[in-house]
Every structure is written in structure tokens, then in C-alpha cells.
Length: 239
Image 1 (cartoon, rainbow, N blue to C red):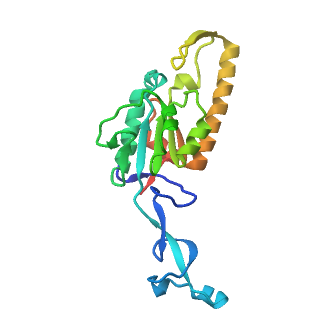
Image 2 (image 1 turned 30 degrees about the vertical axis):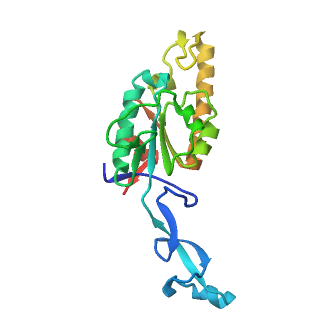
Image 3 (image 1 turned 90 degrees about the vertical axis):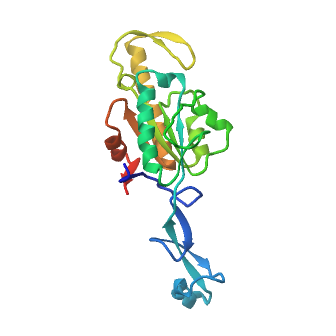
């Protein structure tokens, strides 16, 4: 797994990401900054000096160690249809990729192989300061909360949504459903199932759009090969 790393796509540098602005060194030009005492003369932009009569130092983006905080949803819905066990496998795969940079568990310190889902679910994140660096959130995304607000609070996030095939494409015509998150029950038929699928598609689209604007996103179906799916959807990349 060391051949892969978690992909981060920051729009501007901030603490915890792989890029940081430093004078002179790096691969990608970032900006011109007014010359400060101690800047190396070889990084002075002499063309800018010729135009303006002032000294400027060329600033580049350089790679820096990332920090990843992993949050494993342990709410009641995650315990159904094999989602919890599969999500733990996904987290282990991602955390192994991030060990050399900085892999931490939300509320549990540095990742050392032991996992425990957060029973309160992702909503608990609204009650605490944003974790440093990148938050890797593993969840089925079925909690009733303002997901857009939560993801924006996290600021930079890798959202891995884990769902069972039966949730994405129910294979029944009529059923009595039990919502384990709120405890309600309801009878459903073809009309309700169609409405559910339409609402789910809209929900998945909102999650995918928001998460990719802030970082990256993958939807994994319980049982599918983990690494190929994460590579295909842009959460993992070659080092």
C-alpha cells in the first residue's frame, strides 16, 4: 500500500495540506512577494525589478507532510448490511497509506491499528473544532443532518461513503421498513420505493458535489474491491 497515497487537491495552502509556500524552492510557482532580508538573491525576480524598480522574491509551492484525521461513523445504520466491517477495512487501507505522513483517529490520537466507530455519528463533528489538516470521513451518509454545513465546516475533507447494494437499488416491491436512526417504521410499495430512489440520487449528488469542491469523494459498495474503487474515484493516487 505504500505505493499509493491519499490524494489532496487544495485550492490554496493551509496547515495540514501537502503544499506550503516557501521562497524559491518547489515545483510550482505560487506568487511574487516583496523582498525580505535573508531571501536568497538567486530567487529575486529581476524582470519584476526592471518593471517596477522594487525587489521581489519568487515564491513556489513545495510538498510538505500532510496530516489526516480519520472519522469512522458508528451510528446504528452503519451496523446493517455489513457496512461497519467493510468501512473498517476501507479505513485501514487508507490509514496505512497515510502512516508515513500522519494518520490520526478522531478523538483517539495517532492511528496504531485499533479502530472504534463513533456511536453518535457524524453530527458530533458539529460540536467540536475542525480537526487539523484533512478529515477523512467514512460514513453511509444517511444521518439526518445538514451535510453541506458539516462538510464546509471541515473545510478540507475526503468523504468515503459506504453503502450496501440493497440500499442503492432495493430489490423488493413491498416491504415494512424500520429506520434505525430515528426508530420509525413504515410500509412501502412501488411508489415509495421510486420516491426513495429519486431522493437518494439527489442526496448522493449533493454529497458528491460538495465533497469534491472541498476535497475528494468516493462511493463504495459493500464487498467491492477497495483499492481499485478508491483509485478510480480519485481518493487514492500513485506516489
